[in-house]
Structure formats: structure tokens, C-alpha cells
Length: 282
Image 1 (cartoon, rainbow, N blue to C red):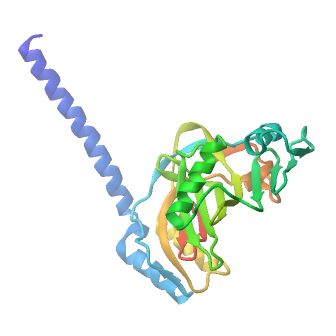
Image 2 (cartoon, rainbow, N blue to C red; image 1 turned 180 degrees about the horizontal axis):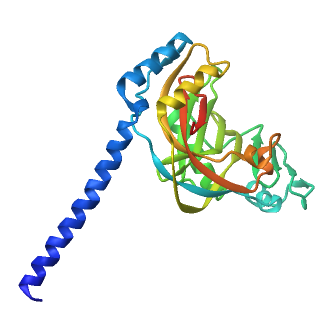
Image 3 (cartoon, helix red, strand yellow; image 1 turned 90 degrees about the vertical axis):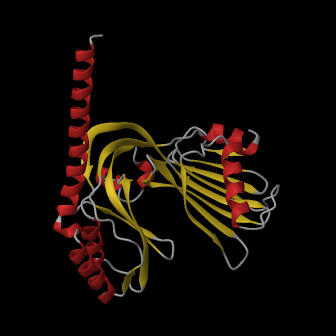
């Protein structure tokens, strides 16, 4: 290749790189230019929440996140397959052909709702030695693998030991290192193993080319002023997430009847007691 041409290509490449870098920096600066992302506005927001007995211990993000929307669907299961996985295929199955079903073993019960939600209970769990929260987390992941559920898309959102010696372990779906709501796998354990699993899981079908903004975190926080039952709550985390709202499809009473839909960028606000609220863009 001609040396002069090579130098020309290098110069053009550097120019393109600088343009891309400038665009990225400018985009970030625009987000910070939003008045609601400025420090005085955030401080005023925190002050207003405090007057409503809502404390903010979390750092309030100062940028709007532009994220792709997601096409999602609920994970589905067949009652006969669950019988094989949980009961070796020999337990009594009620309504094996419908979308709902119940499997009854000697000490175990599994309920399948609309082929989507799985509620498993074991009155006499055994096979594990759970001594602390770390053990409990390991046991839940082992349980999922043994029953052929993926465990690489989990985010642990709550782990707690109760006064009666049982443990609560709660997971949410992870996509692109962010939570995908509404999707959960929750466990209750005692010292011998899993007492209960409640699972309603989402799968991502595709990521759209269209991006939406979360809006500012401070605007999301201001919506809490109009919500009930938040008195004396403390906010410990504010983070962007993806949110699929089945109610938008008309499933007001039972979200497990929803098939698929679109998950959009939103804010997740977590409180010290483990509860959370999802706020869509204002």
C-alpha cells in the first residue's frame, strides 16, 4: 500500500473516532443539562420526600438512560414435564391437559397456573444442610439446575433469615445487567432444604432498534409523593430497569394470563424493607 494513502486512511479513521467520541460526550452532557438532573432540583426532591417521612439513603442518578425496548414473553411449562422433573413422573396429576394443573406427591405439591406460574411446596424437605444465608443461596441455585432451570440470568434482590430460622431468597430476571420486571423466582428454605418455590419468569425474544428514555430519576421520585403506604420508608437503591406491565394488555386480575408484550425502560426504587416500586417515564 502507498505510504501516503496509508497515512490518509489513518487520519480519516482518527477523525471518525473523534466524531463518535464527541457524540457520546455530547449526549451525556445533554442528559446532565436536564434541569431535573441538576443538584439543586435533586436536593429539593429529597427534601420534599423527607416531609412525607420518606428518607433517601441512595445516591440519586443524575442522567437519563436511553435503552432499547424488549419484546418479551412468559416462560411456559407443561404439567407432565414438571411431573418428571419434580416427582420422577409418578405423582398424581390433576387436569394434565389444561393450562392449569396440580401435582400431588406424598409431602410435595406443585401448582401450575396458566402454564406460566409454578408454585412448589415441600412439607418435609431434605438433602441439604442450610446453616446460613450463603448456604441458602447455593441451595437455591443447585435446586434450579437439578430441575433444569437456567441460573445464569438471575439477580439476587433479597436474602434474609427469619426469626423462625427459615430463609427467604428472592431473584429477578437479568438482561444486559439490568432487572427485567415483572419476573421473579422466590424461595423459602429451612435447615433441610427448599420448602417453597414461586416462579413467574420472562424470556427476551428480541431487542428492538428503538430506544426510549427513562426520564430523570428525580421525576420518578416525585411520583412517590402521591402514593400511599410509604410513610417511614427508606429508599436504599434507585436503578434503571426494564418493565413489562401485563395490565397494559388488559390482564388486571391475573398477570399470568398475559402471553407476551413489550418491556420498556423504567426506574426501580428499592426500600430498606426489601419492597420496591417500578416507575415508568413521566
